[in-house]
Image 1: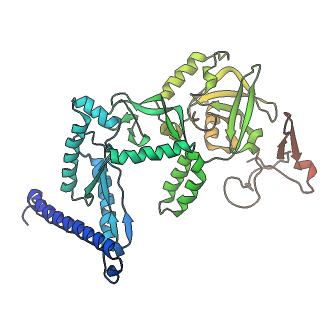
Image 2: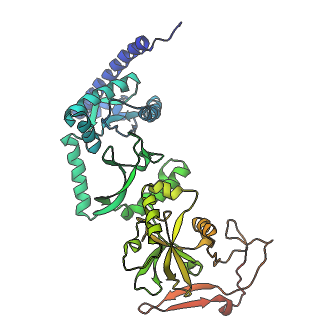
Image 3: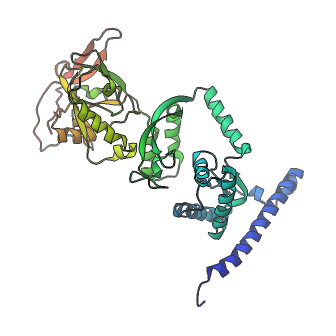
Length: 436
């Protein structure tokens, strides 16, 4: 071959592939009719009904553009490889395709072009399908799904209704990634360096009223089922973090000379004695409370405004921790009565737990980084083990000192009283904690 001519060569094979696809469809219909007529007559003959089933599903593209982009090409090529590989292994593969044509993206495109969404969807999808055929993708284009079709969305409405009937959805406000140009909310994955991946407009964090699924009600099942999925361990870890199942306790911290209290959620109530400061999220109601006298209020507001333009992902993954001390406010550690400072910092999220944390820098990496930066006391309260692996093991080359430790904390069921077992006195063995 002197020169590869894609228009000539690929057109030839597209025609052949179309014929093969048509034969497959006709054979499937024939097998289905035969199966309905007499199931027993199919025994002993290899048909599609006898083959093991395999399902490959792509994310449906939005028909809110003139055509596919490179992201579509990349992901569809990957799934197409799996589709063809499974077919070669003898599987009957269902590989559907469709268009996410229902919602704001389609509406915004219609507003931009001045053409009715039904017409823009039809026109754009025709070009999408042409491009998919050009790429030689193996989607089943004879059974396309349109999410704007009433025969499709009636089932999504039915499903939502069932969730609602069983108390598994709730209506509340929450911050989302908002693109002021597309006039819609977008997922974290669609934010590229703080900008909308479609139109490159700066993303805003906007408070929006919406419906939310109570995924936490299914957290246990979702986490357990991850063990059955053949995914990389790093991917599973991200999924577990996203599901966000946490077990712990809520603890109230009083603010000195104020009636207001800060309630925190912690998965490690045993580290309460090591809490040396509190952190509230920029969204926390404490900041909005006009009765509290925050002496550097203007500085705090300036910091919050800056935090509003960050996505949750950016806040969680930020290498450098930032925050502002709430001057004039001091919290009281309920375990030991110590007065500790209060900070507002964007590494704490308003939608997680109570939107406030007790910071234990000796036993939490993020708290430690923050404490080192702002020169906050670091108090170790968990004794190290003599054997084993990990961070909680003694270092033989480090000095050791004997001191009292609390092993058990019991709160009175009615009164604000606590009972502690001090093993340094009660145990027959000597218990030590170690300075590392």
